Length: 371
Image 1 (spheres, rainbow, N blue to C red):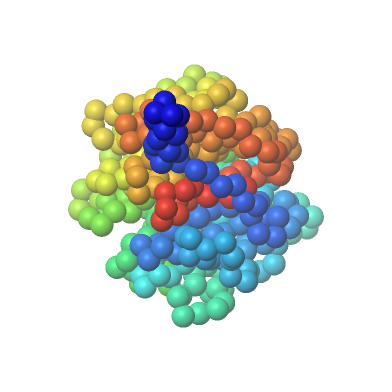
Image 2: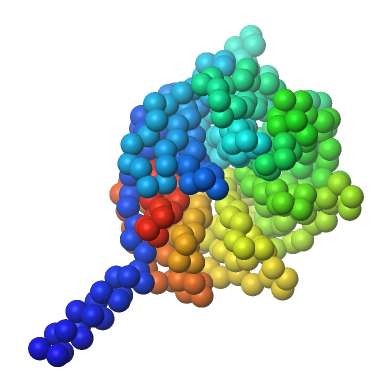
């Protein structure tokens, strides 16, 4: 009987240390979900709905421990101006002053005369007391050749940063692409002129998306894939402060003479950031401390990582296996313990074409994956 009791105790202990993962479908069969959890424990969710060539962005929310979402509303004021094709040009969101919801997305190309002319860069905002998003505004400015997905970061003081990569004139090669920043100090109502952040080291992989974070000290961090040379597709991090300018740190190298159409993830942890991205078909993750140390996680043929951490210090890295152009992939996730070691891995069901999954943590430590 003692051995049975010990075995049961050991099993209970293992279950307590393990992170439980619950997989849910995105409302309305939506594509490319993105989540941000507020300090008050509210999950804010955006996703794409409709024809992948020209779709709408939907927004909803719920408390982290709830199972029912609020009635979704549409973000874009002009119908079908988002694009899901390619999987990396969809909406990203951030929370601003007094809980405002800030959304940025690559617009579907204008088709004047039946031919694609340009892809706009759209932004819309929702104040916490409102039920309708503001009229979407195009912030592309004088830049051209918008391609890989834009990103957004905000703080509680009213600063909103929109970041994208483009060129200053048509016909420029990818090693001339620049990362641009437009800032707002009034919670996304008005924005500054575009400011290039990497003029000293141009070159951005054209069809890859960005991810940014704005900390409480005014430092903006931007994670992106480089294209310094045709076969140099490693990752880099820009850190920018108004009083110090921009600095670039190269994180890794990937020798491939093509754009992998990849996305990245960036998550604040204590006083640093954890990042995750794709390198040679496998997910890489690590902290942005100095010196920087990274580890490869999960199986081969993985794309589109998404990060979440619970109160126990466990981290889930969600990815997509086997996805490609117009090709659906399968859900996969790896759970890391507090020390960063992989404690469990699991494959999930097939995802919709042009989509991926995201995750967040409940107060009991369980992870919710939205697919």
